Length: 416
Image (cartoon, rainbow, N blue to C red; front, side):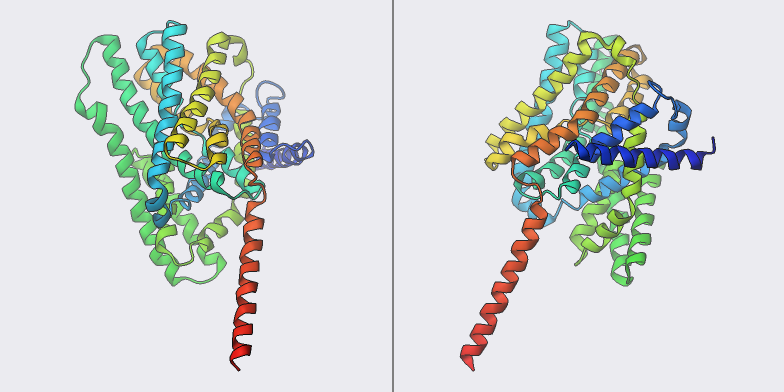
């Protein structure tokens, strides 16, 4: 079938899935994923593995757009004020996930150290895409919402560091070689610092351009060029496209007087990409892996979720976070996706003897968390009372503006 026709059908089916999910009070993204599974190899095989491979560029661009949007949460003045709290919470939930997963694999299932430490390190990263779309769909705003996205972005960085440390430790335990300082520490740091520097350079140039252009279309084209350059240049140099585009967004939000123009023009453009991305993500999930997964896969899913929740709870208590953040943040950190899939590729290259088992468990985890994670995210922001928080905030701002206007008029009237 013609690939453009197939993309159109995938987009249409994903759109309908989102609408059907809405009828059942579920997040749209859950609908995209579920109908995607129906299109995949488990049921109708409309989207074959070859199709999914050829359409990877859509997923790459969608993740880049999401990363760019997440960068808007890293406002420097807020990070100075709340950065320590965000770091404490993120570090705690990353350590929590890794510790619980490692303990379950090593002590309960008696897997060797190499297997346990690698799969535990892969449990740290959170997929930001599903959570971001749930926040946008329900126009959420409040302490929990403002904490989620910086934590998700930072835990991806810490997750990459943890995985970078786990691989050489695993190799050392397998063949008795002592890892060098370069492979143990410098390799992950080079990737992270290099990605951030690349993102800053592109974001700095974009900020200069956006200060000189006018009009919605100009903002949109310039921003799309920058995001595309971020993806392409990062892949060319072996850096992280996700971290690069987070840094582009971070640079823009701190250098432009009106950064919302750049982010709004991208948000107006990318809705169809998100529908395609999640529908295709569902189509790549093969339910037949559930037959081969066994108890260890189920244990991994439970251990990761438990570790994330306990870690974030302890981190929030340590950082004296607001009560809704402490109670519900862990539920919004469950989705697992793109980064974990990318790390599976590294495992295949570096530790091929573990590749099949680890990839199967991770894909099963993604199937569960990407399907049900958005539901938990919705539950969290709902219980925190932050659904439609943006509308309430705008209403308050308008009310404050009206009150100020009235006071000004009264003052001027009394002065006359």
